[in-house]
Image (cartoon, rainbow, N blue to C red; front, side, top):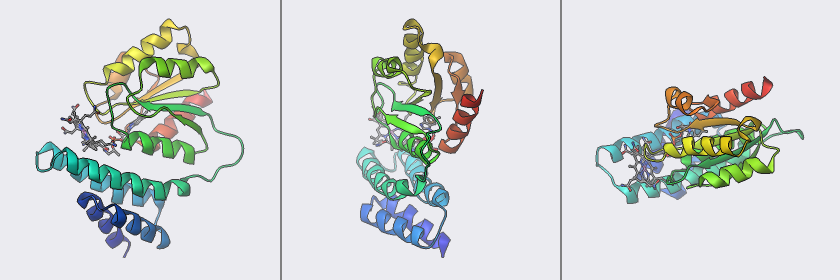
Length: 213
Ligand code: B12
């Protein structure tokens, strides 16, 4: 039963059937399925197949966009399920997709997981210029700056942001975390980031670990 609804979510997402994604996601919740399974084995699994088809030129940008919109609609159903917090936030995170990059699905999942783990999250959105991250850090009260990049061509903006924070004398006041499909631990080390995480759940674990120290 559970596996069927996950497949329904995946199939609807691949068809770009937004209403279907919403209906099957609600149905999975009603069946008592774990939110993480719905996200990982339904929505993200569907998006992975879309990614492979896009890579092989079996589908093109319009189809990817329609599926991305269906994905967002499914995530909106799941988001309230993640948030069950007490009063004291675990920390404050500023998150954004770096300059030149419009991909936001992964960033939104990371943001959702942070909120679910009781972090306060300020989302700067997509195509975020270096100065916007620096301004956010200058305001103070921020524990982690989290940057997402899905394009090899936009990754350099992460390095630029770290350099700009150094020039502003506030680099040591915040922890910097980077992620996104082309980002690796080696790349994170090479630009002087404090942490890299391959997925949203690990991002939360690493942030908690960093803030403990
Ligand atoms: C959806 C998508 C789009 C959509 C984006 C819609 C949206 N609202 O996001 C649209 C159609 C707009 C698009 C456009 C383009 N895209 Co595109 N896109 C994708 C696709 C298929 C899926 C990305 C995705 O959402 N994955 C699902 C999420 C859940 O995974 P994720 O983002 O990796 O996130 C997880 C982790 O990486 C991590 N994570 C993510 N962010 C962060 C941040 C932190 C701090 C941490 C710790 C972790 C973390 O946690 C997430 C959850 O676990 C990928 C293919 C792929 N395999 O990645 C191509 C892909 C990224 N796109 C690609 C390209 C080339 C483009 C275009 C240039 C195409 C074009 N010719 O115009 C444009 C660029 C537009 C721009 N300037 O940004 C290439 C990039 C190649 C490269 N090496 O740079 C890819 C890899 C496809 C390919 N194989 O060719 N794209």
